[in-house]
Length: 99
Length: 99
View (cartoon, rainbow over the protein chains, first blue to last red):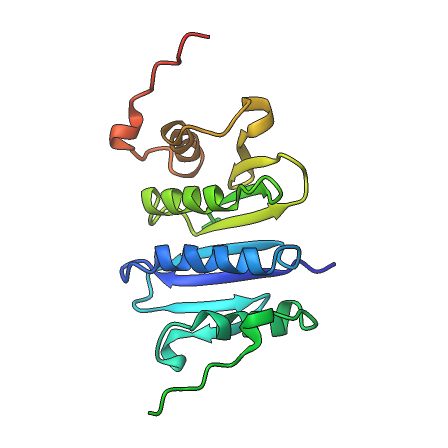
């Protein structure tokens, strides 16, 4: 079976390490049994914060203009790693605040 | 340059995830610029808690009869990942309590 992983690539100068480790824990907990490894990948690229589920990029701070809301991120990871998994309360989509 | 990684393999049933994530953060911080990735690897093997620096095992809970004292662990990771690195206060070896 192909290894199922999430990778969080983060800018070290932006002090994203703790947030990245927190999100890794959330994903490891929510997807226990579905994820074989969570990889924290420090980067020197200024401002970078990306998440990959297996090889697919599911979040990029630059294009999304910010860091993810956790429920949205979990839905995107689920869609790649365990498409049949129901996320319970995380299924409800928060209404986007008016721009 | 060969990828420099630390891997923490931990028993999920023993609730070692948070401690493993904490230690990953400590290593990422102490070895910033020396480590390319920190991997959290959940395992179903009961009681397992191992740390690898690159491919070399530097801690095994079973053979060491417990989890590491952080300074000792950092010295072992340093000896593999960045042998020339001085760890400052982490260099002082705590006297082992009398058995």
